[in-house]
Length: 73
Image 1 (cartoon, rainbow, N blue to C red):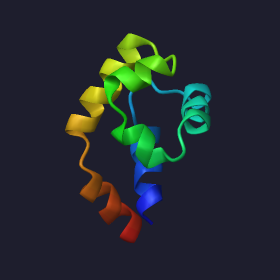
Image 2: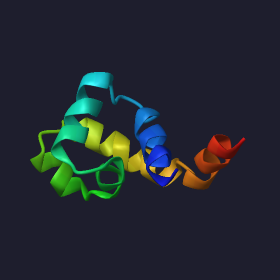
Image 3: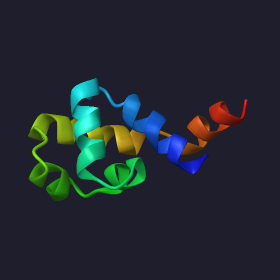
């Protein structure tokens, strides 16, 4: 179930479309590693700086425990 939490969190990231989402999943071993990657690593993988900023902000705002609760419901 844990990986599903990160899948959903990434899927809900503002500005992250399906193409870039799949590219990230190809560039990193798991959705969790994408979620936990430092900004410099995301930039090195070719993400636009504004998207990196959006993802960073989303990581601060997003409550993974709420997503986990949704999955259990």
